[in-house]
Every structure is written in structure tokens, then in C-alpha cells.
Length: 337
Image (tube, rainbow, N blue to C red; front, side, top):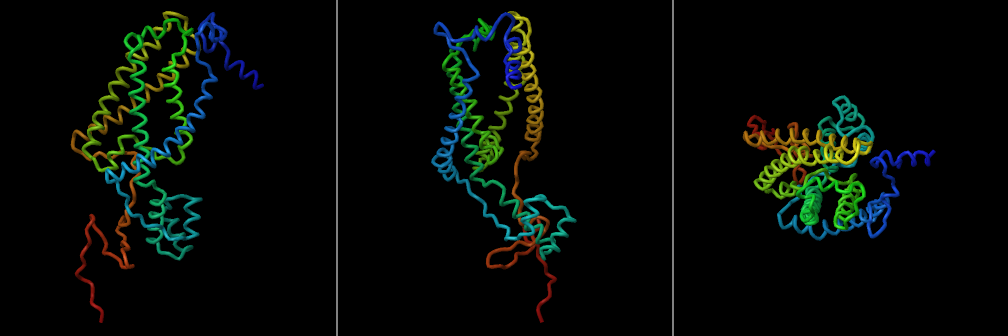
């Protein structure tokens, strides 16, 4: 059964133009071709990336955070409570009002105390500012190096200026070492992200400036990002790259399954780019009109004073209720007899 599936998957008529077989792509006469087995190289490289990332975050990103004055907020921890913790782990992190009342009876706490406990517990699970900064720094560094390296290995190639040359001799095209290692390193990096996806914070590289408090820098980067995204994803990709993959191959071979498959994938990617461009332009509109830009992906920390509850301060005393960040004065309390 597995052998049959394997044979169907690697059937030449699926992936190769007519009159060509896998035998035509075997290494010979000093020519080396890409092989599926090359993907095994990405596994040790992905593990190497995880090691490099660990030392980068420890010895580069952490000192950089201190240099940029990235400070952590003091978080109040939720006191141990078996009943509330069991609900938090098994039922949900944001109980409904009916559930709050039930938990209040079961734990012996007031409804306000139950809500406060869940707010503090949720804040405990939120990633720290330092963790966010270190991850953003790692991605920013890799993407910057990858961009520079990518330009360096392609700028001297003829197909960088004439896309028709991409298809010269296709598919009998020998692998170039610079392109081979660029793709292997890129794929290994993203595979390393798959290994760490459970613990990673979903943030963009430019977020590091936001965490450092560089609001103007972050805004300027957003403007540059929006311009580059629109040009590359909505102009260059459809009118140059997609045109190259849709039109030029048909000048050499009749369409085959691989042609349709990869171009459909490219079409799906283009649809996603249009959707992402809409979100970017919506944010840009808010920016231009002077409205506050809030990243919709931001994981905001909940404050102790939310819903008007009293805040416990040092030495066990209670502060006055807050309204818009200022204490509410009450001149009507009675003196003790």
C-alpha cells in the first residue's frame, strides 16, 4: 500500500514535463541536480539554529535590552487556590459571570476576588517584555542577514534582470551552491521555528523598537514596511513573478500537473497578500487620520484596577479606587466614634 502511494506520488507525469524522467536529472558530467534527499540537511541545521538562538538571546539580545532600557513590569502573582487553578487549567481562563458566582461559593472568596485572581493568573501566563524583545531581536537579525545574503547571491545572476532566463534548459538545470545553501538555511530557520512554536511569542521583528519605547522609530518602520509590502506583494509578485511562472513555461512545454499545482499555490499566496495589504492599509488610514494605532495582535496585560476594584499596595494597605488612573476622593466617609 505504502509503496503504491510512493510510486504515485513520484510519478514523472505529475512533476516533470512530457518526455522527461527522473533519470534525466541524475548527477552526471559534473552537473549536480536538486534531490528530495537534500531536505534531510535541514534537520541538523534547524537544531543548530536553536542552539545559536539560545546563545544570541542570552549574550546579545539580553544586554541589548538593558542598553535600550527595556524594563519589566512588576506582576502580582495569583495566590495558590486549588479550586480556581483546576478551573483555569481545565475549563477556561475567562469564566463567565455564572461560573464566577459558582467559583465564589466553592472557594469562599467574593466574586470580585475571583475575578481578580483570574486576571492575575492570566497575566502570569503572558510572556514577559524581555522575552518578547529577545525573540523580536532574533528574527530581526536573521531577516536582515538573510536579505543581504539573498541579494548578494542573486544580484550577479542573469535571471535577476531577465526572468526568461529562469527557464533556460528547464528542468535540466544544475544546482548552484550559493542558491542551494540559501534555500537550505532559510528552510532550516523556519523549521527551527516549528520546533519552538509552542513557546514563541507571535510578534514581528519591528516590535523590538516598540518594546524599547521608540514609538517614532516604530511608526517610521511601519510606513517603510507598508510601502515595501505593497510594491513587492501587489506589484512585483503578480506582474513579474506570477507572469514568469504562468506564461514562460508554456513556451517550452505543455502544461502538466506540477505547473498547475505550484501556480495554484502561488495564487493562494497572492490572495493572502491582498488580504494582508487590506489590513495594512486600514492601519495606515488610522495612522494618517491621527487615530491611535493599536496592533490587533497585541497581548495587552490586564491591570489590577480594571472594573473599578481596589488595588492592594505595599504593607497590606488598600489604595483608593481609581478612575482614569487617578484616585477617587470621597469626602463623605464618617469618623470613628
